[in-house]
Image (cartoon, rainbow, N blue to C red; front, side):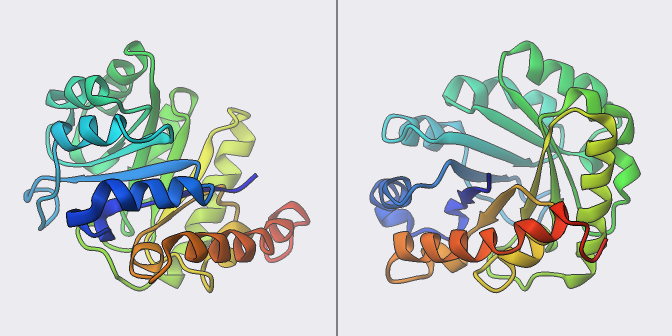
Length: 229
């Protein structure tokens, strides 16, 4: 089953609660919350206070994506604010295993993200600990970027690693997801799609989300049948 995770990075922050409710009513399973610190990525977004405020408005899985240095210092705050899944970047810490232990001990799901230039082997030795591997298909830091087609082989490689390990972890793809690129990502083995500007940049975010889901479902069989692998 494909899960959709609209990213509030591209939402209208003046109407944030309303926009979150609209995508939840349209069937979104996750709400993707991009946390940026202006150091690891060249942008600053939100903190735990905003996450806590939205938590009161939504029953979706809160998918907190930490694009920040020293993630271990902030994990507790985001979990207390209502995160159900916390994803950290492999590039941000020399102690990835320890950070994942911290997340799991708090009773929430753990994810690892890898940037476009990062090899899938960066997550090989922590696969048993993660519930999700996030493959960035843009360079993190800004919304509205184009999907990097060269990341498709990486999505496939991560899917194979997870299947070989037998962990059942999700493969999430973030960056440039639209009705055009969604079936490319699911055809390579993605199961969770993050979509920002293609959803919240639309006059009707709910309709845009449904269009992406319909398109994404057309790609599923390609991976299952081994087409293009």
